[in-house]
Image (cartoon, rainbow, N blue to C red; front, side):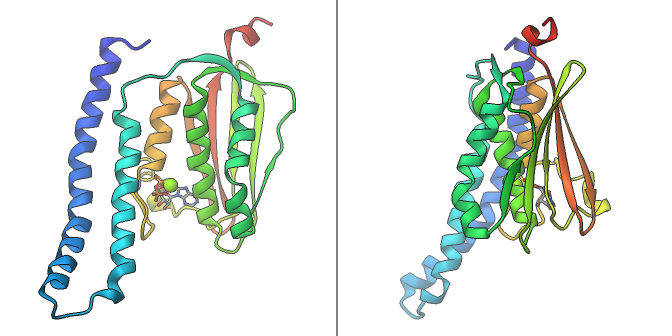
Length: 229
Ligand code: ADP
Ligand code: MG
């Protein structure tokens, strides 16, 4: 499915993102450079700003790491695999974060495998992005629920949180690259999710209630084997 059209569409997107990236990285670079110049002059002690510089550098490093996900040549291999496995993996990856934050994560779907044609690493990446956002939205703790179900010829994955919700006026912007309301966010998470889900011929939707929580729903076509079973 990696034909020329898909490829050029992808390159166009990478190009658009690249200019955004340059913009996003220039500010922290200028900040860090400024501090180093002051340090070099030996007139001021910049130790109080070490943490700030570290944060700026971490942010640049996260931005570039996430950007690579877009520009990486399409090495995905689509295989018929159970979504259950991806969910187990994500829950394992969140274990230390759950202990740190006191947020619990539960799975409410079936134990029986629900398989779709997918690149499992990519789907794990999508779920991880959604779950991380869910954790970040729940400052007062709570539970994140991952649900899986079959509706007709589709598998439906849901990530639900009990967080602060998304204000109506921000809803249309959340999938845009670099849109973030977090002090050290990259704003790339959801745009990466959307891209990957579209690559899988699926859709991603959001429902939110201010002060109560947010649900992200991913609908993916079931694998052929299941469709004809
Ligand atoms: P980032 O997490 O780096 O800010 P994302 O693309 O992952 O970037 O998310 C973009 C924005 O969408 C977030 O900054 C936040 O405002 C909003 N958002 C995403 N998921 C949630 C959620 N589960 N609850 C509340 N707000 C969310
Ligand atoms: Mg995010």
